[in-house]
Length: 160
Picture 1 (tube, rainbow, N blue to C red):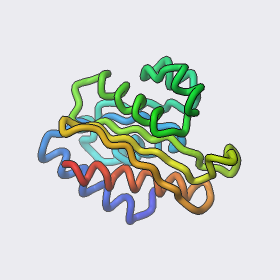
Picture 2: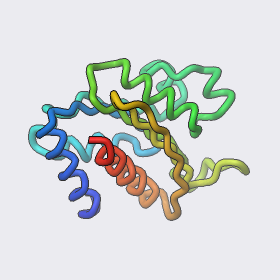
Picture 3: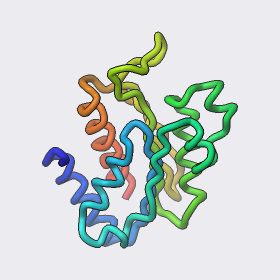
Picture 4: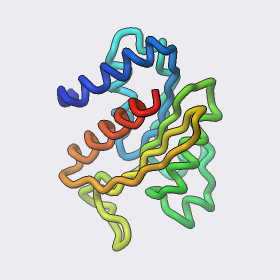
């Protein structure tokens, strides 16, 4: 299901998380649960994976993880501000070591003059702090979604 390069990166992160007893949780929008699916594809994933929120709609972002309506209206669902509120919302839900959020435009539709297909924000929160990264991926819907989960794995790897 996942490209071997991504699966191998995830396996390394998975083993490190097991070794260090790191708990993960995610809020995913444009990836629709792909990152959660990737992590839970490994045996014993319950030892490191707490939960995944698939917050595809604005309403689910608000109801499930506490993204503010005014933030969505002012900045749009695909924004630095929403990615930050998403990751903070996940962080508050459980005792975690790492929370991660992904929001973006995977296409082929949904772009605006200011926000193009391939625009993705990934937020990561740990006890070390919070980072929100902006990416501009190229390719079709599937490629953008795979690039998003690969960058998410890379971000987790960089802080554990």
